[in-house]
Image (tube, one colour):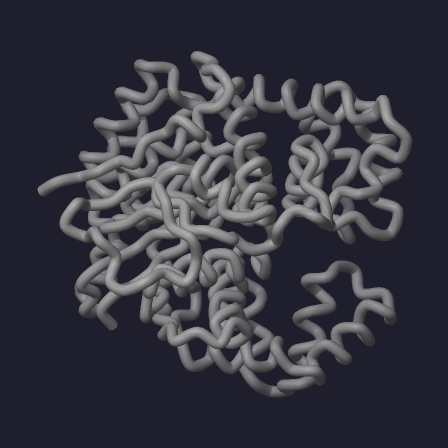
Length: 400
């Protein structure tokens, strides 16, 4: 391993992320690249902090290169999120992918990935869904259990980071790239775990840190984030460069209401099936807040996380025609000694989104989709900013 990659949101960058970067170095990586969620997060929301702050934190704490994981790819389920991240890092030339998992057994995770890639699994999954499984996740796990009775493979899928780790391994197989998966033990709190539920003093979940920021401000994160990152966060708070999530909810709902002026407003939204477009339209018309909208949409069959992503996709107009995979490498930041990249990249590379948008129609579509998310983010900050910032954003360099 010479050039390791990490796929992450870094929102906010915390001690667990810094530990992962350090472990990549310990394992022999000469360079570490990050594919970082840009504009949106996997939970279907705006990031707490703008890209510039998160990129600076990642570089200050050990990353060499930070590439944008475009908003439509970042706001996606585990499978699509993993595919997009692997595509970016493989195109940049990474020969290893480092990630955390509750069960850091790389061989077992790869075994599970091979099962999920098989036609036998797809057939078993269809059977489980046809039999009325209570959710896709339950059908998926039951299908794997049927194919691997008595093994530990199905049990992996009970944990969120294991699920994502398996999807990383699967994406490597499907894309047939020369990339070694390396599983690390997930450090600290469980995914989404509140501070009061965790016994880990130094490691907290990102969602817990966002809640702590909302309640007590940036300085309250001092025990859970690297000192270099904390300084950036305190400055961002002072400058008003953080998301007001109450405003985000109102703006998102306003976009959804505006869409309802047309006929069948959500029929083309990606991921819509089984009449979800009608369910979403009814919820938009009948609710007065984003939490109430999500309450109306969420069921056992339709988990809240999926509904959050669906609502954001609908608000921003992401359809089945929105590119599913990144068609370019948008370089957000780099240590100067890490440039230039070794060899040619497999995708167009630039720090300028405007330049990438001129490459071809697919690049133009992805850039436009990214811009919509970034413009929403700019409007929803404590101190709102004008449109078009993603096109004016300059690359962030860090020199030792």
